Length: 353
Picture (cartoon, rainbow, N blue to C red):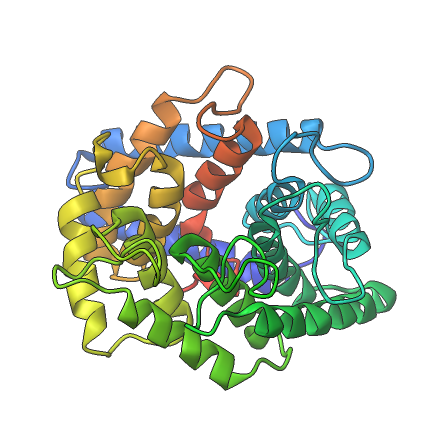
């Protein structure tokens, strides 16, 4: 697809060969070779249709015309496209990815926030997802001017996140100062993943900020291994937040603490069957965006049969135009599904095993 071979080409070939070898031994999830091949073909077709839909619905300014979470939508959509192997300078979606990067760069404010608090009342979501996307772009950015801009934007974004952290070590929908020090699990996870992406890309991140965030997650853990909504509103465990917290802990390099096995056992029991029940608290795509990352990191013995169920379900719900409908907005649901469908490609450092 590209004119010259690079690391992404090699990774794609390796992933394809690995998947073929595993399929030759056991198929996909124990199914016949023919069924496995048919499923893989349908997954790839769905992925390409969805990528095409995202690229066509992007505005010339680099964002998507949604009424809600404009920064988060752009960042998630950009992440979905770079998950395919394209960069800002190479691949079929290079133009769209570059537009997304430039749009998010333009949303960087003097205090480091990426987003607009005047139009987004929960701006920490967008800030976290933007850090994640831009940090993944930085690693393969070939244009010197944009690379310098990215380093500057991300350095200030990291500083903003540190200043926005609450006394308990988490984050809320807005900064600690503006939100009366309120925090909750889902926004905390976006900050941790974004900060880890920045650190992996060479942007300095305070280890104290990460450690305080990890301790926040531990403090919100209940006896059943699940994570509650907030340090201030302890209550029943939330499967979705627990899956997201576990993914964030893996990103932070925490595989061996005493808390991780308990959290993993809880999420596996609650989510592995891929049900529609209240365990996902209505946020099915959010839940499985993170739970899929957790299962993927367990290795192929667990991942491959789970992948078959997850991907077949996702593909069965795709609309004819390539998008998916669901909670929040089709752009959000489509981006989440695309990130899940492309985990095996292994292009993004933040999602690699």
